[in-house]
Image 1 (cartoon, helix red, strand yellow):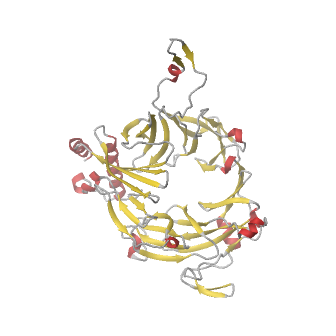
Image 2 (cartoon, helix red, strand yellow; image 1 turned 90 degrees about the vertical axis):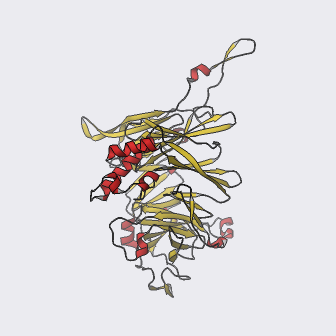
Image 3 (tube, one colour; image 1 turned 45 degrees about the vertical axis):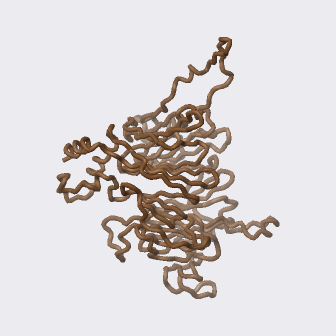
Length: 519
């Protein structure tokens, strides 16, 4: 989340009104957020649907900004009613933005250009241009032409807000070569950049001659991760790759001679040559086999989560120490639920080292800790559990016929039966330290959803917000809780996208009481 409070109340409060004279802006920020958390969870506080819109193109949300028409139009959700920040000029299909990331200026750093101190949208176009766009005006601040030898398609953070990765589409090769069964040795390319000021790290070629018959590859936190169809996942150091296999250091905007051609790096038509090509086997950091290549690292100390690589093991998760692959005590976690959609598990994003395991009717927050008699061995225990609000299903196992006979059902309801409250989305609001949980119940032909706020430390339910729009479980949904804002994006059939914006409405009297207690 960005450093500027978005809550209506926080925007109206001056430091003097709050009685804050601390020099440390972080203290003020934390105090403001504490007030906002109390206001959000206050019983009388409501969240009102202030804006609804529909679109034929995907809708994206990022930190108070709603993007339409492939990021061409930007709407601010901070005002009492969303308002347009900018709309870029129309462009051809080949120039449209395909993916984007929001970059925000780091606090306390000296940057070369005044425009660098404002948030930027880092965008990838369909014709391989990487753009830095002002997040408030839509002005293009910087342009980099990537290359013509592949189609770049995806953006991601290697290190959040510091290093980005631009990933190409997988190289299938010419149609005739595919029909003849000729495989292309280069699977894809990864272009890596330091952000602001933009500088090139390099473009890495992922070659099957080196890695074998891999199906995908990505870069995260300085680790190259490659995946195989067998379920095998291997990890390599990107820094080692740079040191050993960078053919030539390239600088954006500088002249370069490459393969008999001279041009300027990052300008069309020359672009950026692929300057990192692995020619020898790499030292392996780690490997593991997991069902569908699902593999996560987290916890304190480092642990990883996998599902054993057998289809019948789906829904069973193993939590193991990264240093020696030992299974933690109680490290096999299984919900034992009968549902159409499988449960999911991940390391808690609050950096507490905990683990969140979500099923259709319960959310378990698990704690990883040292064993009392053996500090080198770790164990998994329940920190708390959140249960869906459901009726006692045993009462529904019997049916009374018209003649008065009591007949036992020959089948059991699924744990994610639509007539029962089911958890669909679990997220974490880091600045308010709240878990946000979307629960849905199908009532007749209409689904109703509500968003619940739970204490991140104890799991206590603090607030429940009903969503006024109908929720169809067969559609794709995203829900964002961002300080005083709730935003719901829904994808309906025939590529119809809907966006519903809710904003916090406080009782003035209780708001004043909270402010007085904080002063």
